[in-house]
Length: 290
Image (cartoon, rainbow, N blue to C red):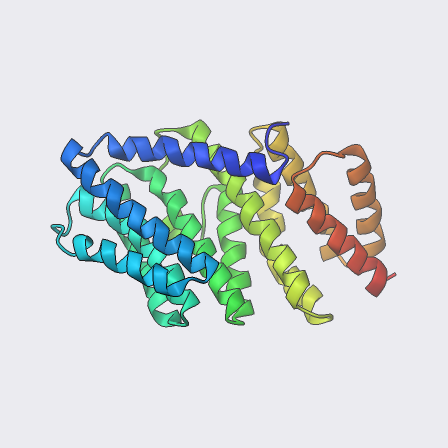
């Protein structure tokens, strides 16, 4: 087991990000790299100060970076690389300052920018777009757009499980350059998006609405999970975890609890968010339906 903890999952994600960052940097001149590094630093500081609530400092660092970003020739590889760093971070700042429409627009803008780069050979950026879709899911939940959040989360996770999507057709990008790393990316995002969504739903929705909405999610997820081809023991464990919810979806809550309890005994080491998710939903079933 390599990815059973949140920390190891995050470490793996960081290593993947570093690898693909190097792929991009290899295409930039030394001069462009020396431009990119300080801009990234300013935008990262803007993001971190936004997260800590220091909005005055966040605004300062974004303005410092924007002053230079606006001088870059549009459409160049450097400009597009900067947009990928700038737009999602500034979107978070705008979300925190209540400028929701502008924040959402920036997320859509960066996804369009990434799509252009995918067509230029940077196919791996489809996973960066998946991260932006997840950011949209989080934003929709935060603003009470529960139905939109659930629908988008379900479709993104279904894509990750099946490898294609009937609804989010922009994600159907041929992926051939780094297949093993792409499978790892899929696994990481399945864990991140699905279990976070389920945990957010149980935290903020009440019965009977909770079960109705969870079943709307599962209606999309469960058939996709049947098609998932695990590439590792960790991925297989995640597939088994998802399929435990078949009993929940069928309304057989007693069987769901029995299977989840046995699964926990047989698999004491699990991805922490998945384990927490099962504990929350078995507790819900026992309190509400048994």
